[in-house]
Amino acid sequence: MILDCGSQFTQLIARRVREAHVFCEIHPPTRTLQWIREWKPTGIILSGGPMSVTDEGAPTFDPAILDVAPILGVCYGMQWIAHAEGGTLVGSGKREYGRAEVTVEEPTGVWARFAFREQTQVWMSHADHVETVPPGYLLTASSADNPVVGFRHKSKPIHAIQFHAEVVHTVRGADIIGGFLFDVCQATPDWTPGAFVEQEIAKIRETVGSAHVICGLSGGVDSSVAAALVHRAIGDQLTCIFVDTGLLRLHEREQVERTMGQHLGMKLVTVRAEERFLSALAGKDNPEEKRKMIGHTFIDVFEDAAAREGKNAAFLVQGTLYPDVIESFSPKGGPSATIKTHHNVGGLKPDMKFKLIEPLRELFKDEVRNVGRSLGLPEEMVGRHPFPGPGLAIRVLGAVGERDLDTLRRADAIYLEEIRAAGLYDEIWQAFAVFLPVRSVGVMGDGRTYEHVIALRAVTSRDGMTADWFAFPPEVLARMSNRIINEVPGVNRVVYDVSSKPPATIEWE
Image 1: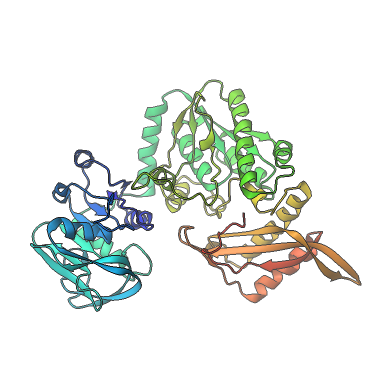
Image 2 (image 1 turned 45 degrees about the vertical axis):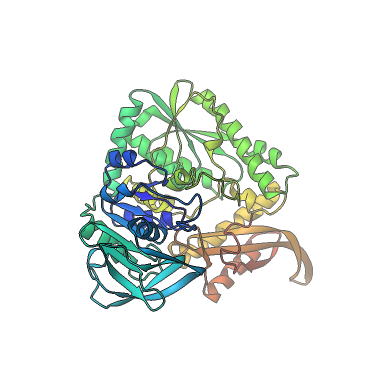
């Protein structure tokens, strides 16, 4: 169990634990001691957080939690343990942020895979620091700038570190987390895609019984894997509804019909709603307005189809993922800033008669892909890059027209085709073309042209939270540009986006 004290890295802790094949869940720090005991955790991780333990309203715990299960305090979690157990906590007035070299003073517990006095690089992000360890505790790690970087209890399985073992900048973070999971908690590494599939199939069958189920299929990884999992459990009791918004990539509808309908044998109903979406988008050039209009239109179209095709259905499948569940709470229950509205069938009206089935709600994106592979979905589907719910509408900047969509669709297909031909697709987190609302002067043959500009975007990332632009070989970029200009009518210039996130977002809108 991970108790989230507000760190931006809490989800990364969960991912690192899952990568070690150990199941974990993230919960708010407001869980009661009784609730935590009833959950029966093999171990508890107290995450980092932005506050000081002495701040009013800072996350806190019943000290008896230290006797429930083995404990690892990370950053804020370490400071809370030190404060609760009688150690000395000092506010430095400024944050220590970045790489640091730490020295292992006690190679046991979380440090069991290290040697005495071994030095290792870690990632710091804190303001307060522990000056002296609490009574009954031993120093386990130190640094030139911090006398206490880690400590453990002399006899109880309570461990703490002042840095983020979960981030890639901590060179041997996996060894530290593994030390806690396997040397301290004695956890069993049995969290695998196959085990999850078997468990979820049994749960779906028990929940659904003989009832009928409908699923909104987008063609993306999440909804496809959710549908395949439910179909494996209940077969023809499932009907999938695929809405062609007219905002899809080239041949996307045909691919979904081929894979889900013909290859997997699902009942698939396709709703052609291209004109309805384009009509709703007419004259809309504000990105948020476009997203909301697409979301509302999708809900209306899906509900109409569900009323026709799901007359006898009792359940609705959604591809909700674990980050969606986590984001539904914050440590203090407060709102977070809306950067972009997320488009999801989660906007369905509350008076719909369906009960929800969310078979992927315990999974991160990479785990969803592995479950899809274990279900036999083709790699071209489970390995595909993320695609936004509003589709190409937010990659045509400004107002959306059918001709502009066709231009973008063709340019995007050439771009992805060249990425695959170069063997680079799996090295990239996300790649796509963008139709810019500007024209540029060019020369073709002996004549002057004044035509459209296409921007290409490709980024590397582990989770989409941060991203770096991908450095294509120059000859690959040249080939992409030449093909798009020569093969897509109305385009005479191609540019490549070299912005990282932050400060830019991955999508342009």
